[in-house]
Image 1 (cartoon, one colour):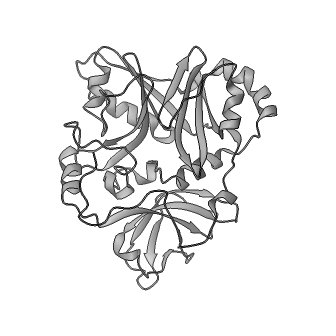
Image 2 (image 1 turned 30 degrees about the vertical axis):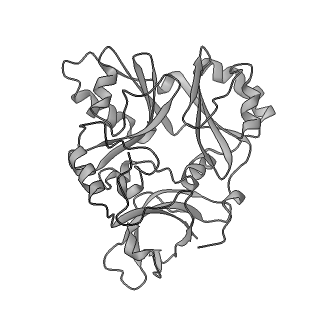
Length: 327
C-alpha cells in the first residue's frame, strides 16, 4: 500500500458550512413504520439520541440513495446529498399511499455546519453544554441537533444542524474562534472514513455490499422487508463479493463520481467506477472506488485518460470470501 498520509489533507480542527447536504423530515403517526419498510436499516430501533446510516434501493437492490437518519419523537430526519433530495422525496412520496406520513424539504430552514475536532466542538458549549459521547449519538434542543459522526484518522467529527436564523447569527463569531475550512474537507474526510454517498451519476449502479455499506452499519439483515431486500440478502448469504469499494489517490484534480476505471492492460472494459472524489492537498484527488476485487492484487488501474490509482488503506478491513453475515 501507498505511504500517503491522509492527515496532510484533513484538518484536525475547523468548521465548514455544508451546503451540499439537504434534509427531508418524515413525520406523522406512521412515519417510523413507513421508513422502516423502505430503508435498509432498522428505523424502529432508533433511539432519540442515536443516528444511523441507511440506504434506499430499487426493487433490484441497487442503491438510489444513502442517508444519515435520526429520530425525534415520531419524526425521522434524513440527511442526503442535495443533488438527489428532490427525486428521492418524490419517490418516497409515491409509496406513502394511505399512510399517515408527511414528507417535507427542510433544507431552507436550517444550516448544516461540519465541525472537526473536539476542541472546536467544545466552543459550542453555549448551545450544547454536553457533547454527544460517541459516534452516531446526538443531542437536540431548541438550538437544533448536534450529531457526532464517525471519527476519521483519529479526528472527532460533528454536525450542528441549526435553525437558519441562529446559524446566521452565531457563525461570524464561531468563524473567529474556529478555523474556517472549505466544504471539500468534509467530503474528503468521508472518503478517508470509507463512507460513501450515492450521487446522481452513481444511482442504481451498486448493491450495498459493492460500496461496503453493510461494513459501516448501513444495512440490517434481520429487520425484514424493504425494496430490494431479497437481492441484498442473497448477495450477503452467498458469502463472496466480486466487487468492493477501496480507497485510492489519483493524480488528477478533476475526478468525479461515475467516472470509469480500466486495467492498464485492457482498456476495452471498465473494471471499476469512482463512487466519490475530492481534491487533496497534493494537486490530485482522493477517491472511493468500486471495483472488481480480482484487480486489487498486482494490477495497474487507471482512468481512461491514463492517471494511475495509488491504493491507500481503508479504516476498516474488507471481509475475506466466505466470512459470515454482518447484522
